[in-house]
Image (cartoon, rainbow, N blue to C red):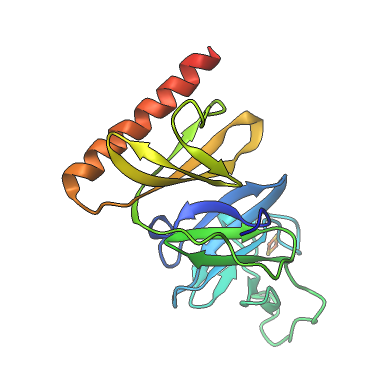
Length: 203
Ligand code: FES
């Protein structure tokens, strides 16, 4: 287990051809999934004129910038410049690429290169929500280790992955040990109650 990896989404919430903006450790990232299902995390800045790549679009295994349509392949290298269709783009034109992996039903990003794997987690993807406060995990009966909180909500054992967001906010990505629909509904309500509790304590 390592702190090098940040949980950034439940895997089912990042569809094929989807691209979303993220901030991890103060770095703006475009997180996207290719047509084949590959997950990628890139610097959210087009090498051409700096447009956010998270405004772009995915075709096949490439991400294209919305501004002038430059497209970038799986390793971040520029593949095509529409205004110069016969030009082979120079090798130096490439987007910085970060490590990204889908593991245990969660998408993880490591802004700094690491040989370690993300923590082993699993369960039924419940939901992600944001909290405008720090959750007191111990008071809520959870054991927190790195980004992983283990405990129980509404009688359902679960894993909650904690993603720091800018401005003191957090995203919580929840996986339930149970797959029973009734248990998932209760666990979801429990998660909302946990958020309310944390935000009221802050107020
Ligand atoms: S700014 Fe991205 S292609 Fe021009």
